[in-house]
Amino acid sequence: VQLQASGGGSVQAGGSLRLSCVASGRTFSSNNMGWFRQDPGKAREFVARITWSTGSAYYADSVKGRFTISREYAKKTVYLEMNSLKPEDTAVYYCAAGRSASSWSYWGQGTQVTVSS
Image (cartoon, rainbow, N blue to C red; front, side, top):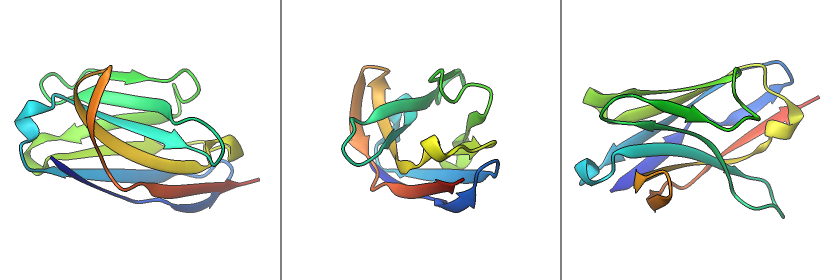
């Protein structure tokens, strides 16, 4: 499975961005698609995930109510709509694919999101 993430950028606090992740290859083996983020010097943290099969979505408490994950099955694309962005959302965002919430086998290259106050 190959993952290509895009859509990062720089915004002011309160702004919005939409990230996209296009999956290719043997995607049928990975029912879960997720977004993670990592700030320099910090551990990578879970942001949101969604299942291809049912579209069930799960979020980290820190983004619940502000971020929305969705998928477009025909295009093998997962989106992360980020609203009401805060400076603490600044990080490199990675998309990932895996069999379950605890098994992420494939990672994209990361896209930078910078939120200024």
